[in-house]
Amino acid sequence: MKLSQKNKTIIAIVLFVAILAALVLIASFLDLQVSKLLTKGSLKEGDYYATGFFGVLLECVGCVPIYLMIAFACCVLFWTCLKIVRNRNNVLGIVLAVVCAIGVVAACWYTVKDVMGYVFEHAAYWAQVEGLSANAGLHKFEHSGAMYAIDAVLGIIMAAPAIMATKLFNEETLKKLVKFILATAVALVVANVLIMIIKDPIGRMRFRAINSTLGQGMIDNRMVQGYTPWYKINGQPNDGILAAFESTYGVTDAFKSFPSGHTCSAGTVYALMMLPDLFEFKRKKSAKLACWIVPIVYVALVAISRIMVGAHYMSDVTFGGTIAFVCIMIAREIIILKGKNVRALFSKKSDEKESEAAAEKEEAIPQAVQESK
Image (cartoon, rainbow, N blue to C red; front, side, top):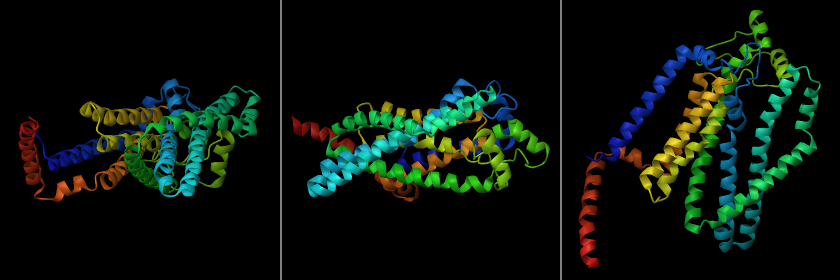
């Protein structure tokens, strides 16, 4: 028996709420224990930075999806301006296309810069741990003109093939992708603004900050409280404590654990779930399944890696990923589906209409076959 749209929506909501409730419940009681378990072998006692391969890898590249999505959006808008806007206004189309091309390069440049920033962060810290004089040199080189030039060159190298690849899209595809970009952009802006608003007042101390020698000393001297549950509002500590972490570990966010911005940024891939709503794939069921499973698996891996390096607790990544998911789903419902699921949920006649439409479709198929003969 085929489920109606209303029943599908109800099942989806119930399943989502049940999974979220279970994760939050587990995290509320076992946050600290989960962090201690997953950081074993990756984060040594007294250290701030982890050394585990999986955790460090995803720490460096975990945020890449949000920058690549911006680059892709600018590519699509570039060709939209040249193929559609230019037909109506030649000058405006060219100007906007140039702006979009610059946007592609900027997004690719920042992708490289963000990844290399994490690489240098780890390299500088371990140079300091090993007592090497290269520590200050690494920090200096990271912000040097040469390094910015390297980032820019790599950004251009990435941007050029991206722009040329998207040239293949026709006008109809571009129009659908503009809608996809609009929904994604609205969702990501709202999600990341929420993350930024919440982080400061909660003021939760990261597990790796608690694990560090500096953090342990502060806890022992009762300068900071140390671990607190996700729902407790702590606020940011005084400037002296923040300055101590910045001078020792080069970080300014040791007390911004909840919620996870990294996991929220990784949640950009949830936008892939909107593609089956816009495009007809040759193998629709398998393609739709892939567009849902791949994002969930990727975000889950990034979330686990954030716990493994001590950057976040289970509750941090749960809420960070959920914020991204909910914002994408709301944007999808409003911009892509035009309220389809909401109407089905609250309309009493939705089930009857769906049944009638299905029946009419079944009747139309044999009739069309006869006419063709």
